[in-house]
Length: 287
Image (cartoon, rainbow, N blue to C red; front, side):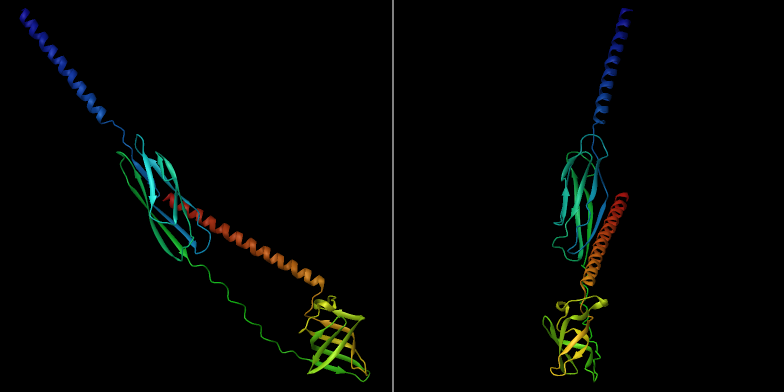
C-alpha cells in the first residue's frame, strides 16, 4: 500500500515539473513574438513643382514620415538633385521634411529627381523613394519695340493782308530765344517777336512760357508784320506740342496712377500664382 502511494506521488511530481517546463516554454515563445518592430511610412509618393526660368522659386512642399509600427524609428532622407534642398535630413519616429526648390541657373526644361527615405535597424518598409518633378517654363519674350511713328503730313499756310496782319499755320520752329523765334513756312523763314502782350497758348489752351517752345515744334502765329524789317510782332502764338505746367502736372499724376496700377496688377498675379501652388500642394498631399 505504501509502495502504491509512493509511486502515485512520484507520478504527480513528474507531471508537475512537466507542466512548469511547458509554461516556461510558452512564456519564452510569447516574449519572442511580442518584440517591437518599427514600420516606415512616407507620404506623398510624388512631388511636382513648376516655375519660370529666371523667376521666383516655387513654394516648398512637405514630406510626412511616420512610424506605423512599434518601437523607435530612426530615419534619414537624401536626394540626387542640386536644385532640391531637404530640411531636416534625419529624424526619429514621426516627422516632416520640407523640400525647397531653387530655379537659379536652370533653363526651360523638365527636371526629375529621386528623394530617398531610409530607416535603420530592423525597421520594415525601408527604403522609400519619392519622385520629384520640376517643370521650368521659358521666360516670356519681351514685348516688341513700338513701331516708329509715321510722319504725318502737315499742311502749312501763310496769309499776309495788305494792312500787315499775318497769320501762319503749322510754321516749323527753327530757333528760339528769350523773346524771339524764327519759323519756316513754305521755305520762307520769318522772325517772330514775342512781347508781354502776346498770348502764348499750348496744348489744351493752357498758358505756356517761351521756354516751353522747342525747336521742331509746329506753331500758329497771328501778328503784325513790320513793313521795314519784316519782323512779325506776335499777338497770339499757339504751340500744341508745348504743355502748360498744369497739363504737365496732370499727365505726371496720370503716369503715377498707371504705374501704381501696373504694380498692383503684378502683385495680384503673384498672389494668384501662390494660391495655385498651394492648391496643387494640397491636392498632392491629399493623394
